Length: 345
Image (cartoon, rainbow, N blue to C red; front, side, top):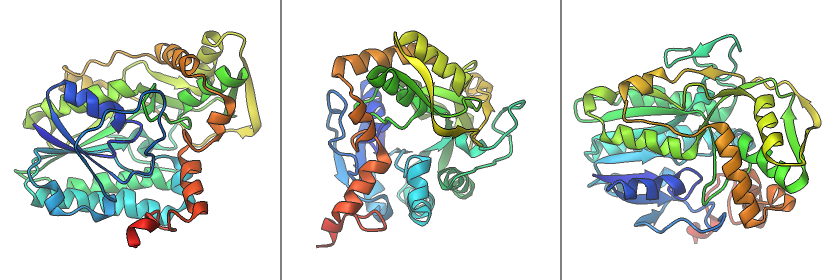
């Protein structure tokens, strides 16, 4: 199988590309390079790739591939809110256009990295499956809803889109994101002794390790078309829904000497949802997630200790997506539409 992966240099992609290669899949990458050099430990291995903006992908760029794994996006809520119009252009419009051109190029399978954030503001009494109503509360989550809606319409006998709604991801990656909740809580606990909560700790989140996300994508790539054609799957593990306060307790227990603290102004967070994962477990029994949040917290603490994570690292641009982008904007290297200024010369 020959696969094109967008966003292969990102947090998930830098883990997934070598994961798929090890499974015998030929992987080529496509990335705009916004986070090149933001390495945590050993840089991700190089794969055949093109440096190109998602908005500029042509049919020719997609010809000859059996599948597209579409990970590239403006990838969190604060960054999405920085420029909502640009978020929609990249995350929604360019993603739908990518799927259209993939279908025209003869690509038979299109795996879209969606998010459980599409469920948004939900009752904490409900545990949601794939039939639940969408209730997005941010431009990032709205864009995911719209891509699922519009790409689903492209499905035909020769083109199979699949929507993988990842739970909130955590875990070690060569392109670490320090803005993801588990990564962030462990980082602050290790570097400062404070398990620093930005909310009151009451919201529910489904959580999934980055390697278990890779397992789900691999299972979909290998599955018979009849099992996955046009389907949406919540990606995570049954039993791995937690209140943020429960995650904080685990971090405090693992990172010795740390204490739970609250950021000034911390209060309720409208993003609150619990999710079911029975569909992917029953439809794709080869998908066998192995991680728990407790094990992930222990893994992160070991990695932070190995690489000497400091508090300034958590506040700098290497591991915080919005600060990396803001830095490039301030330097004039990116324009307001998040395009490289150098590419226009």
